[in-house]
Length: 90
Image 1 (cartoon, rainbow, N blue to C red):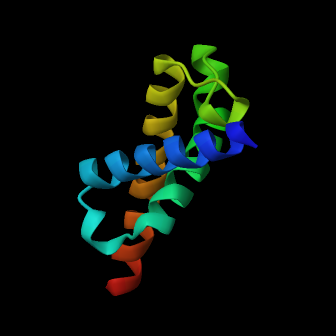
Image 2 (image 1 turned 90 degrees about the vertical axis):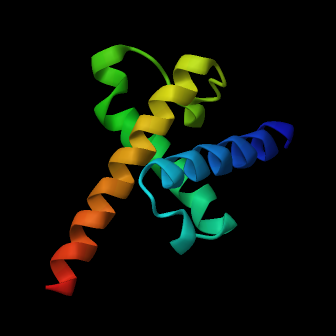
Image 3 (image 1 turned 120 degrees about the vertical axis):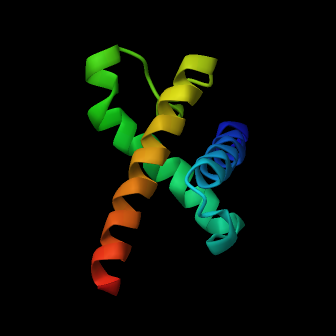
């Protein structure tokens, strides 16, 4: 139970930092930041973990390298979402 709460908090922080980097923070609330952080960690698990050999926060690895990999995954996720948003507006 404690791991789950830590996972949500760390996922929210990672999602928030990623949204600040991608300048989508004004469009997102707390819940969406948590979702972006956790789903971004899944993206990183598929794309970056095989290349780098570093786990993500979804694998109960709360180390600094795991948080950085999860952050990069969240940034990739937001970049993909932004591409679809821009394509739909045209």
